Image (cartoon, rainbow, N blue to C red):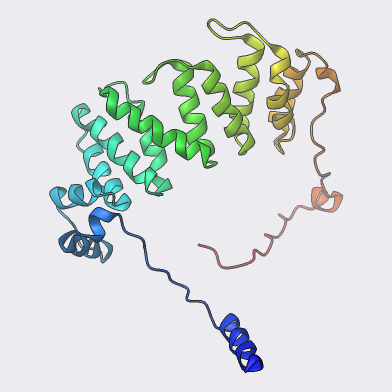
Length: 256
């Protein structure tokens, strides 16, 4: 019997895993047959009305929220920009990362007027995305906090977010953070030594231009002369002397 159980366990582990998984719907949709039907129609390609899209978006459907926000933006009316930002934030919160650039654009639109509660929600969505490793969200929110619009000025928080963005690969954020420490900010004196971590990240960049700028700034901090840029791979002499362009490397997997 023990051998039979062992064989059964092995067969179960070797069984093919389904390539699909049931999507976890927001409770407001999973408990509503009419909203589930609307969502199914949307995913099948049916064009939904504004009222239908908004119903799905308000229930937490991220794709519907992004599509409704886009419709609001396309009206080219400043009165709808705050609503567009709100629905883009729902989309981002629900994992629709493609909506993040439009969220950043609409929330920084100077023609829009936002209420305190809506701004609080949008900031929470951006901060959550930043904490999950999205460099765009971290850098975008940091710049808003540096400028004091549309959120209140918060330099320490902005620097923290710039560091997150730099650690996620945003070289521009690394340079902005270094400059912020070297030059100082309103109410905060210069602290060149604090710029070292940001400069180390910038010097690790594969971009020679970023390395050069970071190297110049490193001379302005204590002990900065010891910092060196990452070594770049030497150009192949065969490729340098050849008039033919190098062959495109073969990539693993099909192109999207």
